[in-house]
Structure formats: C-alpha cells, structure tokens
Amino acid sequence: MVLEVGRIGLWAAQRQWPTDVRSRAEVAAEVAAMGIPTVWIGAASGDLELPAAILDGTEGLVVGTSILNIWTEKADIVADHYAMLAKAHPDRLLLGFGVGHRGPVEKLTGRRWERPVEVLLDYLDTLDELGVPRSDQALAALGPRMLDIAARRSAGALPYLATPEHTRRAREIMGPDALLAPEQKVVLDTDPDSARAVARKGIGFYLGLPNYANNLRRLGFTEADLAGSGSDRLVDALVAWGDLDTVLARIAEHHQAGADHVAVQVLTPTPSQLPLDQWGRLAGAINTLASP
Image (cartoon, rainbow, N blue to C red):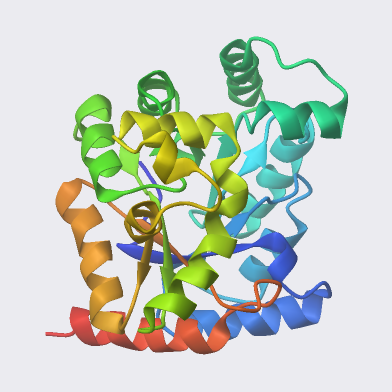
C-alpha cells in the first residue's frame, strides 16, 4: 500500500530549511497548520536528519525525499535511518531515489559514470534485502525506461522539471496503479518580466544537464528553446507564473493528465529562503478549493 500523500504537496531544497532542529520543527508545525499533507525535500541527505526533525515536530505531515542520490547516499545508512523513523512515525516517510546527472556525480564522487541503470537496480536490490518496503520508495524518472522501472520496482515516479504533457506520457507508460507525483515550479507574480526573471533563475541550471535537456527535446522543445536560460515558450511551459488561479490551473492540468499528486516548488527572488508567505497563500487557495 502506497503512502497517502494527498493531491498537492510543497517542495523545497534541504538548503532552504533552517539548520537547527528546533527551528526545523517549528517551521514544520507551521506548514502542517496550513493543511498541506506532504512536504518534499530536494537534495536530501541520507542521514535523514531533516525528515526526522519534520516528523518529530508534527503529527500527520508526510515527508518525501526528492531525491536521495544513489551515488552519494549509501543504501545501508539510508535503510538504518529509515527503519528508525518508520518505527517512530509509521506511514509518513517516502524515500525518493535517483541516479543524478553525469557531470555533477563525477565531480562530486570521483567515480566514473557507467551503467547508471544497473547501479540503480543494484541499489534497489540492497534496499529490498535491508527490509525497506517498495511501497515506501519512489524514483526520480523522466524517460520511458526509468518510468517503467519506477512502476515495477517502487511505489512510483517523481518526475522533476515536468510539464502536463510529460505527466500524460508517464501515466501511459506506468499504467494506472503506480504513484505519479510530478514536481511543478510556480512563481506568484503577475508581471511577465519579473516573473520570468525569477523563473529563469530557477530552471537555468537544469537546462545544461543532459537528462533534462533530452527529456525536453522528447517533449518537442527545440535547441533554440534550450539555448541560454530558455525561451519564453520553454519558461512558460516549465514554470506556472501569475496569480493563484493561474497556478492552480496548471496543477489541475497535471491531475487531469494522470498525476496522483503534484509537488509544488514556489520560486522567489530569494531562493535560499523558504517561501513561507507564498506557501501560506497557496495553501489557503488550495484549502478553499477543496472545501465543499
């Protein structure tokens, strides 16, 4: 049985969270009070210290890692910390794993980038042996092969830098039962120039990574779209900017395309900080929408 993550969650990088345990717990309690069911931690660490603080500081909030890099986070360490947290907070932790990207992985680890799919399958085998339930695992996946593995070997897929069209294609590949939880970037700003400027800062790095660039080419974007920090067409496809209704409409497109859950990443001019004010505005609109 897959964890209940709700229809919409909030995504933020680990570096955006406070570093001390008390502050982390306080922020987590504030997020839980917003009525959001799940928070996703980008670039999470295998010691799971941040998930632990969030889980300890709340009662019902689910935490997902998006993602734990299989090249840098040892499976046995992750499994040990998972076992402790799952015992203390059952049905509230979803481990997202991914293979990362060749350039950053080789630079960070000194290891050659070879057979990433085989490395991933070996990693998943180890998690099986160590007793981590597949229902509490999900995989970063974009291309057809990885989406198929995610559906067969885990609860499902966590596509990043996704569009509703990618969500539609992913659902066709994965079938009806696997969890599909794409990430969607948003900017709560109705001015085209300033909104796109923030959006470009949020996506520029990823356009230089082959995994993402190749996926965007599969979706029909051209070299001109991918050049520099991205064309307006590409920016608008990857980042929903505008008022709350515009953002909610994009989230709805993912659901209509087959997503079970959408992990919303709010981009702001201060990317090192958690966007708590914007989270509150978004949560209020989501809760109003969900009310009878």
